[in-house]
Length: 330
Image 1 (cartoon, rainbow, N blue to C red):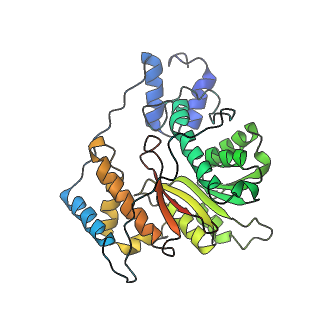
Image 2 (image 1 turned 30 degrees about the horizontal axis):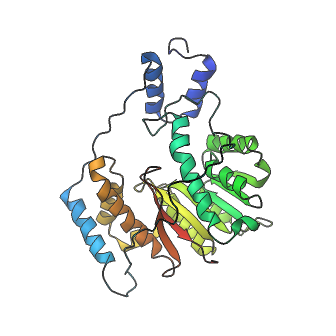
Image 3 (image 1 turned 90 degrees about the vertical axis):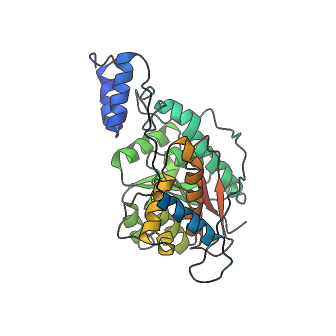
């Protein structure tokens, strides 16, 4: 710890125990040694003409006026909420002990800065969007948070909806443990159940176990890749409302599970669209957003026409800001 200019051995131990990214560990140590934050230099994403051709083709397909089993409608997202969100200042910041100055895996910000300027705004958007459903804060509802192990979203929902019960399912044991600690800090541990389990296993067992809570609303904030798709399928099969914001579009964790939108594309189209979304350089933001809209419009096709909205929150909070919402009661 002294060699790395850290205050204590506990600080170094916390960094090594809680940070999954080796790059972020190195950046934090370099920042301590140099006395200034390390600037992240992103390598510009590359895009081929073939990828652009596929994007144009799928956009044209989504704008066609047809009515067959593979047709789908390209949607333009609505913004039901403004960017000025009121965040509960009394809510504890979800940080491990000694983690305030750790560099976030998102690169340029410390973890605290990331939570203050990005994550907490994302979770508050979810809270306000749920509040706009149909007086849900007056109902005793059960929420399923898919992939929300550290508890950021679940705790925010529990604090704002006193009658809500939440189930958080995540395959990362350390994240689940951190989520339990955060729920205790915020005095909502009696209304949040943290489940350390692969979501595909939870899905398979749901409805089989006796005495379990019936899920009313599925939420997923940046559930990676096909985890978002499985959350959508769970909601469809079990007739749940949902607020789901996908991210990490190329990731496949749940094979042989096949996302619905893949059935509307060939393999080259799936690969190209997923890679375009993940372009991080500023000059490609337009193509990235267009590809997100194509993919999420195809995801929407799995449901009855008109019952799922494609929405978005401010890209100041995240570039992965397209959200699929179903509210069948309102």
